[in-house]
Length: 116
Image 1 (cartoon, helix red, strand yellow):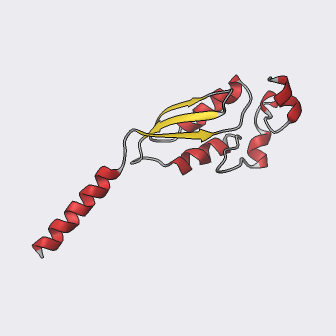
Image 2 (tube, rainbow, N blue to C red; image 1 turned 45 degrees about the vertical axis):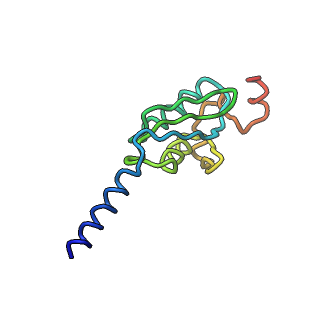
Image 3 (tube, helix red, strand yellow; image 1 turned 180 degrees about the horizontal axis):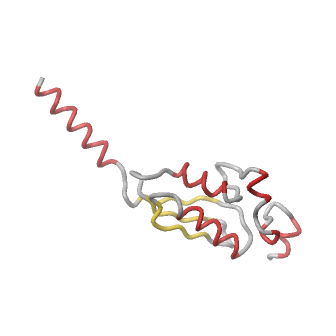
């Protein structure tokens, strides 16, 4: 019985230590301007456990540092799409997209051309 309890404790400790408190991830997020940058970064940062979120307007890459004990990439993506921005993993709803500023309508070819 002692061996089973000891083994269980070792397994639990291993699982606990396997989570990274400074995990890094990079996501592709659609947007076209500085207002998009602010909205995307704010949506990511408001996710509990996200320590850093930097989005590059030119590459559309969002670089994240987050605590895997408190959040997941899936949860971060959910908040970004709720703010109206598409990711490779998930698209924003039409309702969320409709709320972004007219200059941020990244699905519109004319808006994209205006930002080049």
